[in-house]
View 1 (tube, helix red, strand yellow):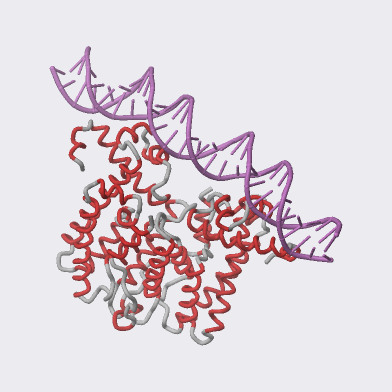
View 2 (cartoon, rainbow over the protein chains, first blue to last red):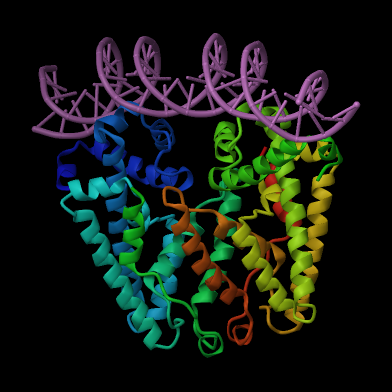
Length: 221
Length: 221
DNA sequence: AACTAAACGGAGGGAGTTCCTTCGCTTGTT
DNA sequence: AACAAGCGAAGGAACTCCCTCCGTTTAGTT
């Protein structure tokens, strides 16, 4: 992903990827304060390897965040390519993929403490997030113009829904969690779908904007 | 709640209630392994007070679970009383209340390790859960017969939805979480609502049964 | 108002986690 | 085959959490 990656030895590159993928899962389950040793253990690498690649926790978090954003971008490309004339299908397909991949694309948007890193980053993370948001918004609008996505929905509704759905319930097995998530996702898709809901029961509320979300996060010291 | 409660001194009874309420919130956020000291701190009582009232963690968990079930029962009564001829409104009203109260009625259903306590309990907890489930199922069916709740939904879908919605996202403030949860709840209600969805896009799946859920939980050692 | 039993909170020792570094061995690359 | 790069395990320091002990405070009673 990063250019420095290309200079790594093959096994190092493999382990690096493994760590990021595992970290995504563990962060999703336990939050970003999860023990790094558990991430290493579940990734099947020594703790030293993790520290060698990611000197401290913020670095790891930022890499996971960047990786998430890139992955969502790729999936978005693919979904649109596979459904070029059908924005709703592309969106539904995308969401199913994202949930299955357990991506928390919103993480970098929501997690405070990342703020510092975003700034240290020169704003790269935030810029990429905004870019992705724009693309998602375009898809959303297209689906609404097709009349198949409920009016009044924003990408924020959708993203947050995916995050809440992806988040496994603590204390129960992975298989049961997957089952539950799948079932709930289909319900969620129903709530997004327009068909006749639109006229029948329009969303009556002031939608949350991205700026507003950011302000909330910033205010919280 | 319990008869032994009546023998407690007024301040003790007050603190006991406070601890249970706080424990519900903390368990919801962090899972049932959350530090007891945080529960005590957030409840504004000393750690000794918590231990005096609840000698060990399982005892506290069971009390919280029982309290949750009782509370949901009361809310169910109220919702039905307020909408005697309108099951769908009663259901929607109930869900809004439950989310706002941050009740995780399903907790005792989902959390393993509680299994032992359920048995030690002589099955009281499980019996009450099943009883509540039956009542909820009756309401569900009624709303479906009205043609206002989507066909194919079970109380499990609804309960699990409430749990996932109630669960706050980690690392962001309580106020933002509340905002997000409210917005997502309205979406969720939309997905439950029939209106015209029914004919347009019936739920095509095998629903999860309560027995099946229990079996999953038991299997997981 | 005074008394007493009940309840309270905080301090602190001990057990268990988590962090993060050091170091001798292994492996990919040329 | 040689060597640089990468690897995992062990372990000390710091921290967290559990749970009890004990001196102080408070609710309820006479």
